[in-house]
Image (cartoon, rainbow, N blue to C red; front, top):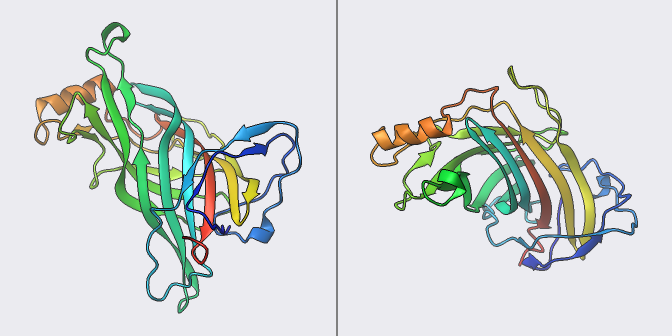
Length: 272
């Protein structure tokens, strides 16, 4: 899937949604393989897209065959240990590139940046702010996009606990022990007791000039959730308490995540 853009941002666009023709759209598929959206009466607002965090091309990369992808998650459902949240808005924005090497004649996935929105990890006493714990998703050093018809993404994440841990050092997952997600728009094969769940394939929503925009749902319920670390220093009693309250660590087969997202692509030749 390639995207072409003459702008750095795409601000809110109303687009038809009902009766859209589905496209078998992977990020590496060609534009001709994506079916156009059919006319419809209903409309949906799109988020703002940005390509400022696209990874830099290497000297041997072909800008005509390399694309940058900006994915905006508009709803995140997560269950891990005692944590069970549905987060709306734009909890995650992620940018990466599919860069084409002219010598090897192969594309490779290169991570750009992940921006996470702060959310409430654990409510306070009697639903007040007293004792509430907040965190935000962060990149944990692992990224890949294996060839697949199900738009698979391997992503290492961590949750940086921001309140009341004002130093921002307390984390659920670390770069050395991340929350390792194997996201798919297809159907998962989780360990028991989890049952398979299915995402939604990337479907062409609209084009805005040279920009192509897709809608998809990624899921994974095969991952393990590590305990909290570094809430004071290393394996301190505070980290152990946070883990206990959050029901962590939580073994694979007991956790799940679902990401509703819009995806925009831009060809590097047209990227400002």
